[in-house]
Image 1: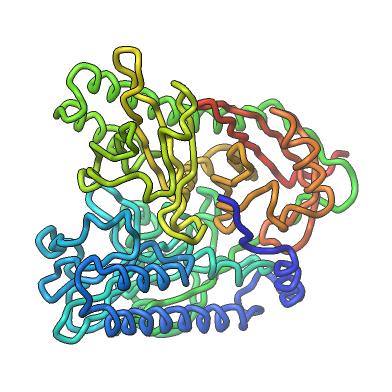
Image 2: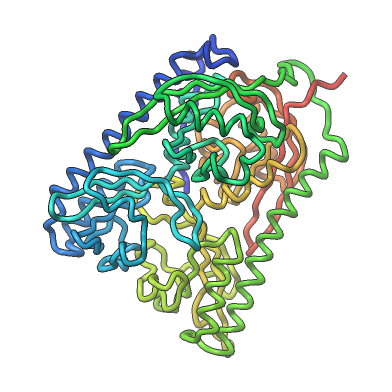
Length: 524
């Protein structure tokens, strides 16, 4: 789970190109036009790619290895691709780009009412939750194959949007995309992706925003306006200015926008020691830690219940199957849950279509990497490219019966789904940012979506000056502490001093470090 997402030199280049930026969208005319051109280019490339796949692969036999190789190559050409599949004229799945989804082959997607908007005679795109039981949003792109079926790509909106958001670095602008139904295709608030601004209850108190969307943004290909909505990262309503353009995609349109809000005055200067956290402020870190640990212990409790069901009723029992399903349904940090036997084969699972698959397809042999009888955490990926779109955390718990290990319960969660749930931490405290880091330095959560999945110990972004000194001399070796470092402030406009406090929490014999930083005013 280590990658180079945004090297420091690139950030410097972006900052230099935007050195005259202010807080107004009107002062940054190139940001929106550049983002529009980037989005248009990506969408055109996706449609062309899917059409080429349809021409090359559609006549291949189901499960054909050459077809799989081509699909997987295309899958790995874009970091935001989650999966690519081909359906025949009856909507039966014939090919998939990820071997872990091979059980889909032969499945009739129309029969399970799987996004009927995609099975039409023209190119189509829709953003929807994955399934009724898995509310992870995906952007689905579909192109018809003449008289043959469809090619469908699953696009991860988190990864895709984070790529776009890099264009606003240094400008105190927020970038987003909606479709012409008013649904968020991308927004910097991860929990709002896939939600419809006109109908979702979270927007019911923001009539001005809904009116702007309904009367102007949906009907007008370009324009500007203002509305009131919560400030970025807070629940405090502020007035925002917005400007939008249109991208033509898959016989439909998307509105891409940038907005600005009244920027807070700089709370820190380049000189002087920052004040210490107050007792009340330090309690916010404890609150955030407790929130995360509660979910860890909830997952642990549900897993123990499943182990008891296995010991009492057996591997193939309805009781054990129901207990695995309960882990997925009742823990927000678990999605797919499987039981892996000592031959590394999945013999029970939720969803059930994972049954019978070898865990070797994840390039992981669970029995081989197990740590005796102790639970452990490992990382997985479902594709060849390492990006948060395809990275998973796996919580592995040995299942013991009659003094020996019979297998392992593996609860998986996508890195971005985990981070999306942890956006609830934004409600804790004021003017602070939380970060959760795994024991290998991977950022599992940060208020800035572009940093999720980066590695604090290895990525170039964190390798300079006082920030690097803090990470390697204080944060990494010490389980808790307070310190100060210099890094980019809100909006990534300039480097300023920040006060930070951190502590370590342990779950399944893995250490997680949670930190809280803020741009406090200098001490008097």
